[in-house]
Picture 1 (tube, rainbow, N blue to C red):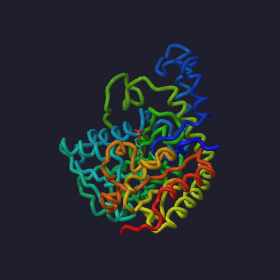
Picture 2 (cartoon, rainbow, N blue to C red):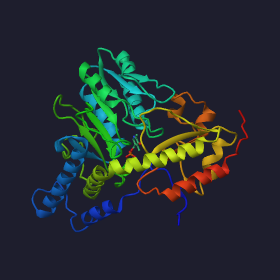
Picture 3 (cartoon, rainbow, N blue to C red):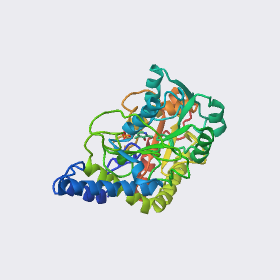
Length: 385
Ligand SMILES: *Cc1c(COP(=O)(O)O)cnc(C)c1O
């Protein structure tokens, strides 16, 4: 039996894996200690659990455990990385490069920095939502200090050429920040091989809990300096003061460990499901894929319903399908997606587009039913343009 609505919005958030919930439960009461309490066993136990999670996270991304800073989520990690880096390195230069299809967290913090004297270049993407290293190279200036380019796009699933961007930034002595919230735990990510200096991700996008995230901060070759966003007890190598969310961190560690074991099988299965969805729907002449990039996340499809009423589709389907017309942050408003607009879609086309994001608990039956529900509400061959 299928539970309705069928959840196809895994890029907005994922359910917590039951194994993650189990790992967290003892840390709410039995092992409730403060990881910063150095004088008794409650604190030691919590500290050990945090250290273990730090190792689990570091192992998945090829980092050293000391390079892992726990935060409240990707938004905080993005802010700490970009603003913290800019403020700590402002004597070295004032120019920052980013990309038009970044998450709002990145774009908004970059915009804020322009208000305090930084210069910003926002690179355009092509119609597939892709950027190219040559473009980034052409935008680099002698006072460029940071490139902020996401690993994989939350709306389209487009994966940027991260190793090439990492190599380019290394060559030019520029720091490289990547928002890898949609990539970590889904596709292989390695901060060494990819040449990443700063990387943000979040628990609730990889079957962990909400309210916990991570920032990778490179410690050597080169050591990356950050100013903290908040001051206090000096937790997390003075970069993120505040009592650690021990249950959340334990859950994030467990979630990451599960991903490291199951990622390859899971992504192969989801790629087949995604292909089935895309081919069944784009068989209709009125339904078009919004990107034909070859580097894509396995579980995401963004489709344009190019007929009158396409923009009403999410509402029409909402009893049966949990899907979205953009990122969760912008779907409260009726504004067309800034990502799709950057790819050259009109307001109407962007508003008539739907993101399908599949995940660990998506079943073959659910997928078939989802396809049927979409086809049922699509007006067949009544082409309007
Ligand atoms: C979800 C998401 C964020 C924000 O993550 P939170 O943990 O909810 O703050 C940032 N960037 C991308 C690409 C995302 O998908």
